[in-house]
Image (cartoon, rainbow, N blue to C red; front, side, top):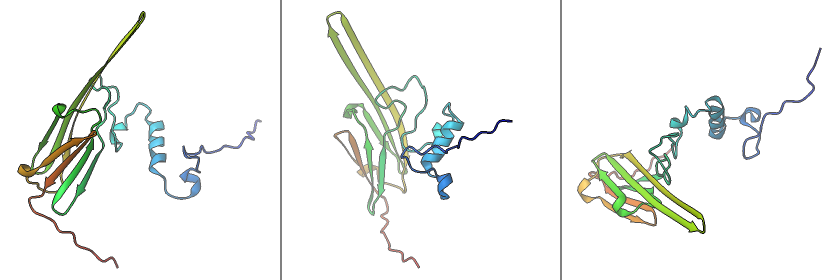
Length: 173
């Protein structure tokens, strides 16, 4: 009869801390994501991720967006909604922004070409990327008064509200 005398260790999380199961606390999102990646290695759960969702090996998507959506910050202010979107490498002429009373749609494409010729060596790389993303807005906006600017790869949209919503302080008991 054979007995196993080795001790089984639960692998540490990437940060080197003890896993949640041994800590007796709640499970972190990083642990859950790692477990889903192990359970569904083909990326079946990739569409549920937040942040920069990937779309696997879709051939029509290339760098710099490579199947990703740009990161977007949306701030609901008293008189307007402020949107910042990271669009590295996107030129104004390749950007299309459209608004409705309750949504903003961002479309962009990029293209770059690198050429390297030395002696007998010749290399040429062309990259193209594009995306389209629609963002729902927290309330109706005045589509005629929208302001947009693009600076250093960051798109800023100021979307004035049709009806302002003053902030009220709520006491917590």
